[in-house]
Length: 133
Image: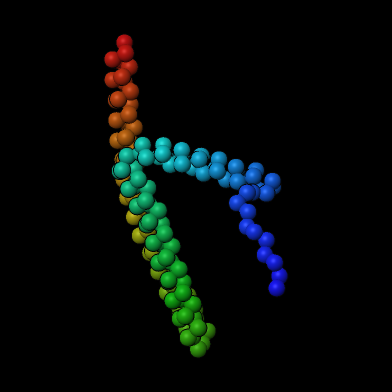
């Protein structure tokens, strides 16, 4: 029966540097996340709404593409494939126009959130400067 080596808790010399780098990197991430909590909730909501909409749009486009490919697979003649392509192209134009409108609305909401916060910070900073004078 083969003998088993005991497992050691100590790190090999070549692992110590890598472990230190990982620990340092994690400390940097924790610090950055700590400072990120300073951002007001409205900004977080606006940012995540934008990301959510973009990802949802990508999902809708991928679904439409899959349906288009399935429809092409059922075509028996070239004319059917051309018609399917035309229908798909018309749908794409409308989908992108609708999405541009939704993203425009979200971008305005995002800008409003940032504008409100920057105005608040500027007001607080000005008040602090006046108090110091």
